[in-house]
Length: 360
Ligand code: SF4
Picture 1 (cartoon, helix red, strand yellow):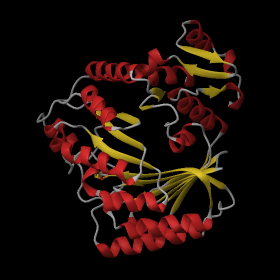
Picture 2 (cartoon, protein in one colour; picture 1 turned 135 degrees about the horizontal axis):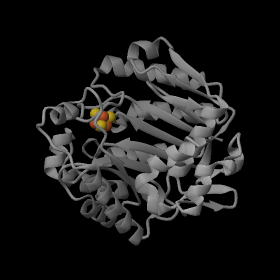
Picture 3 (cartoon, protein in one colour; picture 1 turned 90 degrees about the horizontal axis):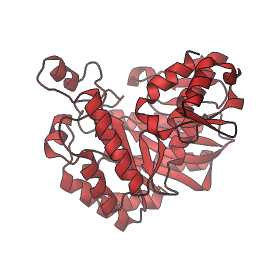
Picture 4 (cartoon, helix red, strand yellow; picture 1 turned 60 degrees about the vertical axis):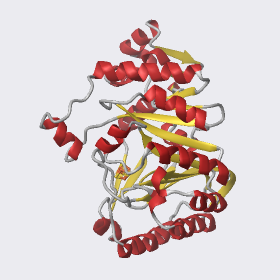
C-alpha cells in the first residue's frame, strides 16, 4: 500500500512566515503545471500498489480552479487502485472556499478537509499575512459540514506573541472540528517575519512560555477526549490522519508535483526539484539511506508518534545502549511489547530525548 501526496504550489499571496515552495503565479504557469503533473502521475512506476490515502497539500490547493483538482484526481483514480475506504484530504484556506466548491470536492471523492487556520486572533492573522478572517473560518466549517464533510481538521501555530490557542481550539471543537494540529512557529530564513524579529520590531514568546502554552493545550484537548497521537496532532477516536501516520511509520509514499518527496518504504527516497524550471526539466534528487540513517529516522519519527518504534526494525541492538537503559529506568521511555514509546509527559522535550538515543 502507498500514500499519495500531490503538491499544489500556488497561493493568492505569500504569508510572512512561509518558506514552503508556494508561488503567486499566472494562469499560464498553472495550466502548464497541471498538465505536467498529470503526466507525472501517468508515468509513475509504482502504480501497481493500492492507495490507502491521498493528500492534496500546498501551497493552497483550494485557490486553484476546481477543474484542475478534478483532472488530477481522475488521473490518480485512473492510474492507481485507490481503495474504497481511502482517506482523501485537501488543504484549504478558509477564505478560498464556498459551499459550491466544497460540494464539488465532496463529489470528487474528498472525504477530509484540512484548514490552515493558525489563529483566531485578528492581529495575529494580520501579522502572519493570512488572508482569512475569524468569521470566514466559522463559515468555512459550517459550509463543509453542509457539503457532507464530517472529517475536518484545523492547523494552529504555537509561539505567536498574542492570542489564546486553547480558547481557539475550544471554539473549533464546538464548531465540529475532529482533528487539531498545533505546530511551532518556525522563523525561516529570508521571511519577513524573521526580519522583523532580527530588527527588534517584533518580540516572540520565550521557549518556556511556548512550552507552557503547548502543555495547556495538551491538557485541554486530552480532557476533551482527543487522542494525542503525535506530538503536534490530536484527534477524536477514528479521526487520526491515515496519511500522516504513513509518513511517521515509515510506509511507502509517492509525492507528485513541485518539491514533492517520495519514499519506497525501504531505503530510497527522492524529491522533485522545487523551482518550476527544474521541475519541468524532470530534475529529481535521489538518496539511498545508509543503515545508520534509516535507524535514525525510525527512532526520530517513531518517538514523535504514540505508536513508538519497533526495536526489531533497527539494524542494531538498542537494548545494549547505556542511554536507552537509563531513559527506560527513569520511565522517560517505556516498552510495549517490542515497541519503544515516549512517555507523553516528555513530549515537550522530545527532541533532546531523541538526540540522547541517537547519540548512544
Ligand atoms: S497559505 Fe500556506 S503555503 Fe501559502 S503562503 Fe501562506 S503559509 Fe505559505
